[in-house]
Image (cartoon, rainbow, N blue to C red; front, top):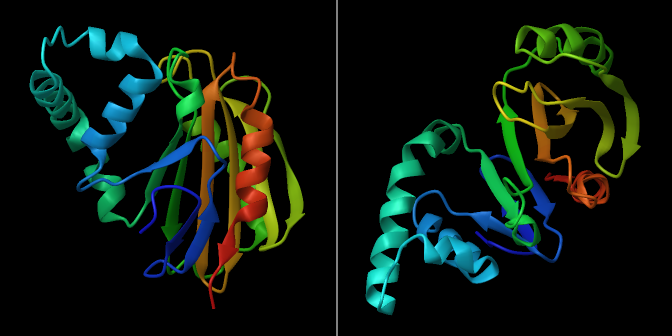
Length: 199
């Protein structure tokens, strides 16, 4: 599966095209590669390793990767995908997109998702204004929610969340970034516009 450009997840029945500066994280083999790429984009990451040789740096990056690997296991088990914008590595946290699939969502409609979505987000700790609506995109009618992430989970973060339905399957595209990322809105728009539900 590609780590840049158009990413096809045939098993889960979708494809999404990442913007130019984005990199998909391979949960099984690519975590160390991602951190290494992040270190190239932001030398302060590599500086934290205090390594004097390339071998020591690689070993340090691999240790850092191992420390966060467990947090991705559930998403990987569900067939989800995660990608980061390398241009935002210098932010308090990089802008990311999470794509995941919920099969067997019998009876779910865009209108129902639109109705129950805000209450579900409130139950997860979201406060403040939640913008919501229906939006036509190439893959169909997307339900969207725009909101600030709960500050006790991710401080100063904005989220743009989209849901697309195909039969009894719900595809979710969640884009989260720091409030200082001026490109978040455009990147989220590009990602949902590029989303494909495969035949």
